[in-house]
Length: 487
Image (cartoon, rainbow, N blue to C red; front, side, top):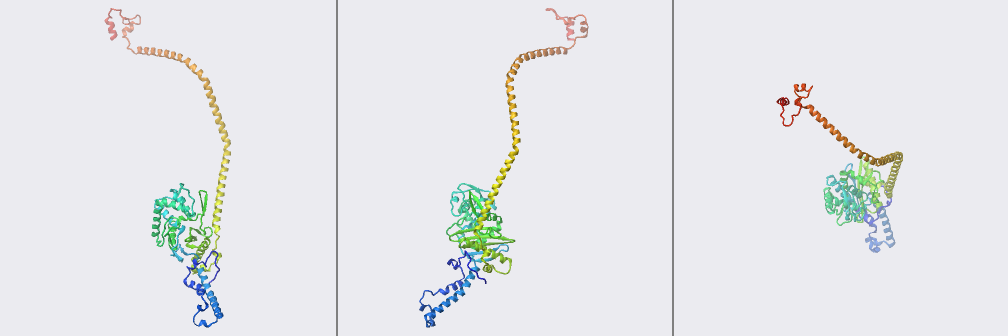
């Protein structure tokens, strides 16, 4: 077995971690100094008292040296075959096989890993049609005033549920978690009940949640095994949710927050999932990495520092891929064989790359705006002559209309006078025309009457008939006349 020096960021001598080593190893480490502090006469019994003090001291020192030589390799091997965290698990999601676990059932506060469950519950409601990612949510005073990591929401502002979920994943926003809980559950207490019901449905037997964000609360705890079960189901049901967890940064209310997952941009194939920290738990991380057809899901809880968390989860993932690739070696064996160069990470890389991407995006946006402005100016320049010509035509038309109006104003009095003078003539002409028309009607009427008898018509050719004469007053018309009239 190859031995290595302590990895930077590891705290193998910390009493906190010594408590989790195998008991046999602990006994080896402590046996040589178990009687320190006792008088020489009391340290050994039986025949040992026959030896002189010098010889006794020499034997004691020799025994101590031998014990240390025997114990050191065992302790060091144990340290490198395990991770420098409180608990951990690794799952090959492609096969469903757990390929590594370490203190997987130790209860630990979940911290912001809680948000994975909160997002799961919210997405369940969206799938059920009881909510929509396009829902607008108004930020309450309670959400705005929630402390810890924040998305920097403002009280009274509105944003979509989709925006809030992104803020929970990237900014680890406690304010976004409360706003989501109030929108989905009606209030925070109802939402927490939904969370615990979901945890029970997923078989998370050793987990209790008191809030939607993971801030410290009495009785709130989980285990690496339960977090693995949660994350496995979450990714199986909502693989599209990785778009939230792989986002490197967001900008809201002019504040930029970056994703704290140290594997993003540092580990090939890393695309999620969630970080967390509270004092009582230490640094936690759920991470998923896909290479080819293999996706690994890792959970580490209780790292001492951010550097230790990053290196240990990366060490676990790299050992996992080597084990899956073949060779018959277990993940534990491969953990011991790995060198620091195989899993060391630059924690500044994730954030620096996020800011580099932000600057690149800002430059692209600025260039696009400049390009649009230049294109618009060019179009305006091309359109300027046509617009100028159009304006000239419009001005000419306006001037022409004004001239016509002036002419009309000048000619109006003359036209009115002419119309006034022509009015009597028109009236007189009209009267004459009417008279002539009446006369024509009268003539036409006379032409329409019955003609006179033939005898009367013959007689009238030379002399006037008596029938044509009107009888004198007092005289009667001749019977013939009457007959002729009626005949």
